[in-house]
Image (cartoon, rainbow, N blue to C red; front, side):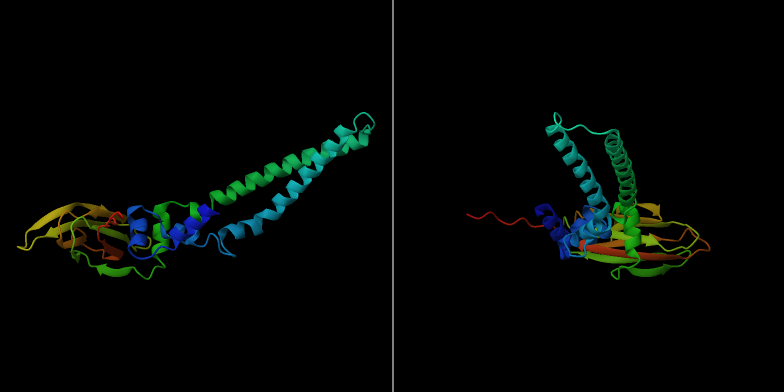
Length: 244
């Protein structure tokens, strides 16, 4: 319960700490929602107990009844002997329990293997982005680039981003890079140019100042790109001074 309480606190994190957990550690939103609700009366653990607990409880009662019967039989072995019908009934009960328990374990394994909180972080990030109001959308026309300026006030801050392309049936990519613009206007490439369909990442800035995140669609002749993105600037974490 203590571990579940700590998980619930992690899922309820807000502000800079939540951004650090989500972007720097790579925890998807679907998992944060899951652990935030883990102790709720109608949360994920209670739902699993209500849905799959009764069959397991029935099997547990059955095997306990078999064990009690065998214990009593062992204690009275010298004075009481089982008839053939009783032996057949005991054997059949053990066979039924074994087969039903194996069936339950196979079933519950499939349930948890296909549960939404066991999908990959990339898939969870893409699914979660569709309903997240913090995301913004921009159409990058063919032959154009889209630039997002970001002012960083403290060195060793983190710039974190999460973006994907909304393309329907046609899967295409877009170029992405990050530049630093000095006070004199000189540009320094901080993140090499690559082409992505989606990406979630971050880097630590070496200098305070103006940065540009650039999505490049200049190589495309016909296709515009619908870009869905979110960008955060995370200041460096300041460790508290030790108490005297």
